[in-house]
Every structure is written in structure tokens, then in C-alpha cells.
Length: 271
Image (cartoon, rainbow, N blue to C red; front, side, top):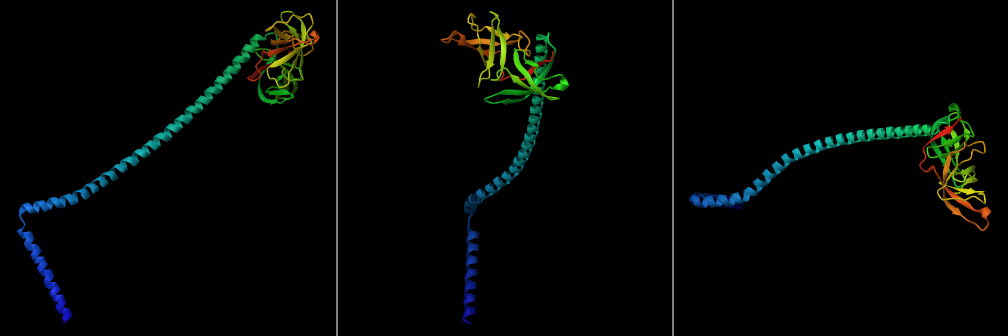
């Protein structure tokens, strides 16, 4: 009974509070209501603005992701075009190199018209402290055999030491085991040129006659003696003359006419 009484009292109180609130709201003037509305607007507007911004942001993200996809497609297209251009550039470089090689062949053939030659290019190098041998892309099928001289547009390269059907090994004049009978172009003195260990562009000129008057930059060429090299092919130029106590032991250093570090194309003299 007491419990029901308490519930009834609470209900009456709640009803009275509601009635009082309604009366207050009814008696509030328009001006005061406007102020209350302004306060509510201040509270609600930031939330509304935030929601609007979020909506616009989401809409903007759609455009952003669309732009990203477009950029990705354009980037892939540019990458493909770049690869195609690089491929064309490589092809042009190959054509350029082939044209340069053909031009060298033509120049050499025109320079050595007195010889029957076979053009070739170096396909392998075997260089060590004791020897310098390289392989060219012609062999017995092309008429190339052992003991045939090899030349370049600048001068003497070496000679063929062995040949297979489609390749041949060449021993260059810079090999330490080489020995070439030479002639000094101005004095016509006979001398011997040999390779120097660990040198790729110099030769040692020895067995110089005591009466020979060597001059720096004098040209050294093949003498034609020895059965391999024809006469008159340029070997190099005198760069240094070393005098000794015994004049018979003096020698000179020759710089080869051929730059072996850059040598790519050669001619093999078959006749």
C-alpha cells in the first residue's frame, strides 16, 4: 500500500513539472525564443557544417581516386613509350656501330689495295701477364690460316697462330713472345722489336746498329724479312731512347700505331 502511494506521489510530481514547463514556454516572449534559437543554432551549426564538409570531402575523394587511376594509366603509357624509345635507340646504336665497322673495313681495304684481305672483328680476348691473344670471327672457311698477318687501319696488329673453320687466334705484336724484324723509316737501319711484359701499347727496339742515329718520333715499319709480315707496314714511333754504357746494349721504346685497348676490327692478309 505504501509502495503504491509513493508511485502515485512521484507521478503527480512529474505531471506538475511538465505543466510548469509548458506554462513557462507559453509565457516566453518571441524575443526570448529568438535568443534561445540563436543559442541552439550556435550549438547545431558546427555539427551541420562538419557533416557538410565531410560529405563534400567524400565527394572530392571520388574525384581524387579517379585522378589517381588516370595518372596511373598515363604513367604506364609513358613507361611503355620510354621502353619503345630505348629499344629504338639501341637499334640505332647497333646500326651506327655496324656502319662504323663497315666504314673501317672500307678505309682499310682502300689503304691496303696491294693485298688480298679478309675483314674480321674481335670476338674474344685472352690477356694475361705472360701472353696477349685474341680471337677473330673468321677461319679456314674464309681462307684464313696460320701465319697470316693481321693489320688495322693504323698499322700492324699481329699474325694468326691457329685457325678453325669459323674463327682464328691472333697473337698481337705486344705479346712478350713476339719478335719482329723492322726498319727505321729515315735511316733504313735494321732493328728488332719485341713485346714488353705487362705493356699494352709499347715495344722494345733492340739490336740497334752502333752507327744508327735514332730520332724521337721516327717511324718503325716491317722490313719484310722473316716470312710472315710484308714490307712497309707501320709498327709505331720511337718515344724514348735509352743510352747505356755499352753502345751495343742501347735500346728504344716504341709506341704502337694501333691502340690495342680500343681495337675491334682488323684485316687478315691472305695474299
